[in-house]
Length: 296
Image (cartoon, rainbow, N blue to C red; front, side, top):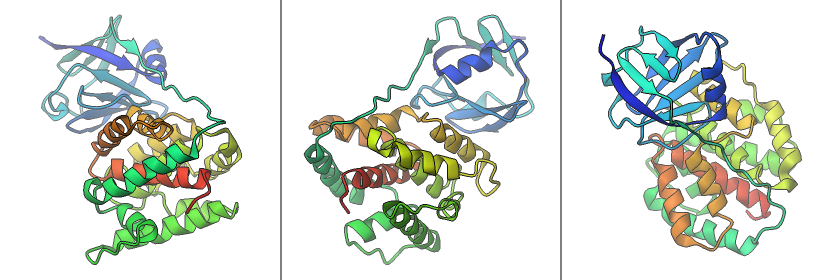
């Protein structure tokens, strides 16, 4: 049998551990254009992504720019032989794959003015650049005073649930019901409520002052819930472990500096994730920053 040989580019520590197992066992869970998901015997989801994506937790990024739907099918086997990973008719060369690790510095001192400036830029850009259908309706209505007469039922329900969540967080009275109300709410592979929560956690946890809040939220997230998708559940699990994708992390740290070009680039990169996932994550991030600097 002939194989299409593809070079591995980056992988994170969790995928590296997976590859070090003596007998790799797993099934093809789902196949999309940019990613293919593998489910191991213990239920953990791992991702192989093409070179059009950013690095992410539990992920191996390879030098392939086509659609995985063209080269991988759900009934194919996964085999590792030395420095090569075989899936169906593709062979991934792992010999020069680099380890990607997320750099997340804990911040104690920061410029409130720089954060405010970048939030102002966000407020201008989200109106034209952000995707509708998820959390954008909530943010425009509650923070910018912009009403959207073409909103749908999901957007209105999300708005209520995010409002409940944010009020309870500010009152230091967050409950599991406030989090359950968000999980699984929305359309797509990772529903908007889950994306919002991920962005919010990713933002607050870089600040030392938010450690207690992060752990409260983390402990209240029901990772055994069936109310969301497998892929989204894996994303939330990674978020509770303080593991986030590259574009989300870059966007968060760009808030801390007076560099509008870098900030806009990171924002645009984040918006490329999913149909509205990048937008929904970004709104979670901004609310995390607003909470941290104690502004509405």
